[in-house]
Length: 178
Image 1 (cartoon, helix red, strand yellow):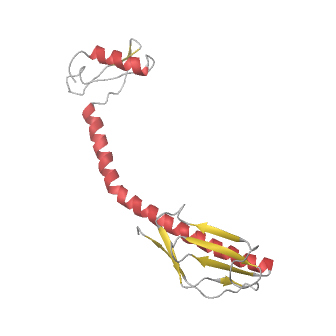
Image 2 (image 1 turned 90 degrees about the vertical axis):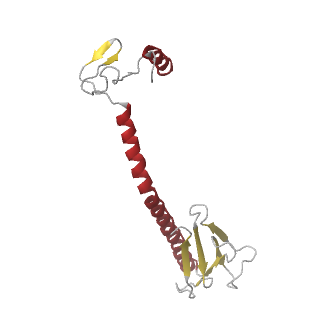
Image 3 (image 1 turned 90 degrees about the horizontal axis):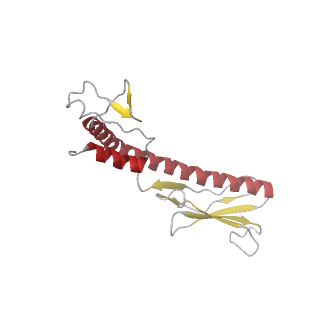
């Protein structure tokens, strides 16, 4: 910057207010970085530390480089956390369906949606026919809301019986980012 610094200070004070300290040092020390004086409310602040614009730019450049290195690792980390969270959510719902089958003494069936791969329905199958009929409670769960990059596939729709057993199935939870 060149020109009258007092106009710059007055402009900053109009925006920031007069109680905000405005400091600088390059002009007071002809870039030797030996001693700089800072003024606040018409007083010299003793033992004040001045930061030159070049020092600030170096710190910002280092932060930018570290961020560029860390960002891909952080993105992968978050994708792994979402995959883990979705798997836990599906597992928790399957375990809850099993527990309800035992406590309510009737079948529960979980339908995994084969077309969108992010939605499943838990059916309280009161009459035991394996289909959602009028009056039977259903709960639709969509993992896409919390885990947007996670999908699943199932080899079959599991049925949980009142004795705590289940029909065999494999559920595979995958992430598009890992």
